Length: 178
Image (cartoon, rainbow, N blue to C red):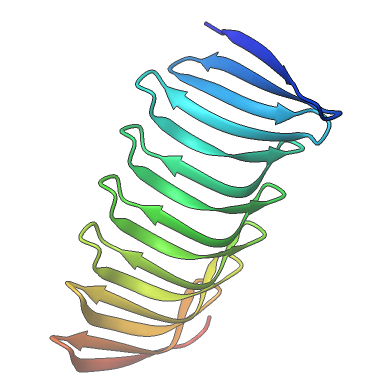
């Protein structure tokens, strides 16, 4: 079933602001938009009034700050878009609300330094991305303790890799590039 409601809010400015509500199966899409500037603020809302996502569209592309939620209302992700592509700092959350990961995007691709956490918010891995691939030094943790560290090149392990047990270095392996 599709329900469509359109409201026009005329102000003293030369442009009109409109409110559009569209029923999409179990979600309702609400958009406040300015036709002259082609800017929309969008919300997806369920029957229990939980907001699933909210943010701005410009020329039908995500722009500015966006926030996403799980169906039960807990935050799922937040970050910025530019011309429909993720950009800048993004944070992602586990279903119970604990931070899952955080890092940078550039032109929609992971870049720079990233951190990943388990549901208990303990660091599980950290390292560098370049164009959506692990590239550079990475560290891996279990129960908050360093267990492995080494270098990646274009998502492949390379160079010296160090392995730890109870915080003590146990072995070093050299991985040659293919």
